[in-house]
Length: 317
Image (cartoon, rainbow, N blue to C red; front, side):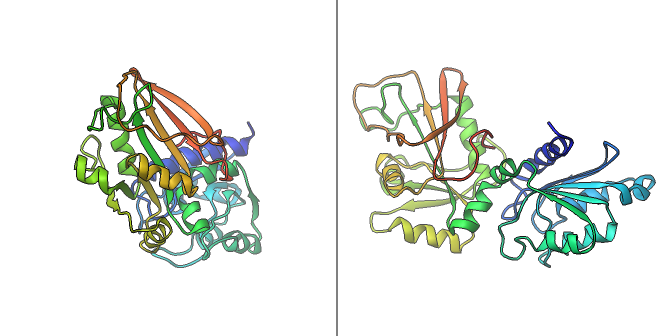
């Protein structure tokens, strides 16, 4: 691991802390280093408040301020160059007079997209781009998908028995255990919206909240027969929904799978069996398994769409 990779990994660790508060902005971490010593670090805590670079500079002790002229600032995402809810971070970096800037990946947002890097370079500051680029993109896969594909990042999620059913004789059945239930609610707190089909909604009356975790409830969406997925996803895009969990039944999941409108699948399998019921959806044969995790007797398999350009080596957050 190179020095640049070491400090970029620290940026990623910091950035992940903003998974709830930063959205709809991306998660970003920043680390300021002099002579292999961190003198400041920060992350984007909450939308509308200071960005990672602002918080990193603010954490530098007064005694270390003179060292900034010899410092390298590492940032997981390109510094912004426009006025939004806060001033441009590129201008702050130039004003602080650091020696070098290392950027994980380019910001796909049209208002930035290379402009921040260009501004810093024109100020005479050395810039390195693309350190752990794929990992930095993966962290903000929701943000990248939303801006690149003009739709939310879509996570299909279901639990099934060992013999491939999602219920018992077509009646609601608890397949998840306490641990995996808690993980499901953690996921809900981290995503913008959750969708079920009208049959699941009418039959199961799901709460679709985060009662087993801490955080905001996702927006609840019920898919009807007469609503084309393309129009639904366009509507969600227009309303700024960057991520969507699909927790419906087989028919709802198959609609997304057949349209190839999915980015991730989280399939939970319990050791229980039933003799009849609703068959679970089938994982696409081309799907790429990221990893598997065991919780008690249940196993969760994490899968991603091979059409995505993001890496498989990094675990979903």
